[in-house]
Length: 360
Image (cartoon, rainbow, N blue to C red; front, side, top):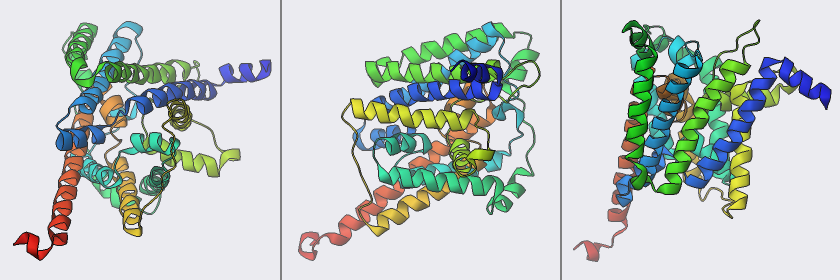
């Protein structure tokens, strides 16, 4: 046991993975119990005129922003090497990827994070989708779909990152603290709309996003090697997780894989404790095809957009990456288009099934 602990703390990668697993468990519990989901929020707002889940999602993003900016200002944590600030983004790719991901999420009735939670709660449809999503994501990053992605990314140009603009302004940490205070104030305005439990869970999720940044940046630096900072996200980790399962003996675990594993455990425990664990499967071949297509679109679109509603919506926004705001807007638009598509399809089916006498 002593040797295991020594190995854990002597290897930055293992220390980061252990912290990520713990953060993932807490993330899974809070997300499952509060039903935190951007697509669910948009659907609830459209169909039931309720803003509870949408407000909770916004609160989580604001809490992540506030906590991360405070972390940078007071603890001096450096996050410039994160994928959201270090990778030059092609705006057309971000927008197209976001739209594709969002529409795919509408087809599959949930985004990558929510479907991971549902899979742990017994939903076999969701489990199938995240497996397809992971496969499609990996094929887009390194496989047969990469030739479609590469020409779009070839036109990428570095954007002026908001953190750099803050530093250049001479305001530095004062500006970060001001941003954190404004974000906290905006989040507090949404408490009553979200409901007290959802609001508390959303704030907890936002703090966990900042905790992920802290764990990966601090524990990942042993003076000789600095691992790339990571925090909560799902598209790349689901893809890398499949590879890790298949090449376990020759692979090294990272933050993302450990985080997703923790989320699955946390969501399972939460659903069992709350009596919400239920086995669900597909109802028809048509529904199966719909969900498979949704998973394929999310895998491809998520890689092109550099993240999902968690990765871009929480992690990317928390470090003020310009592309993240474009990504989450595009994802939301794609989801809304998917909801409108479903509404028109349902209306058409209703009219077609109405007897001629009733139409007359």
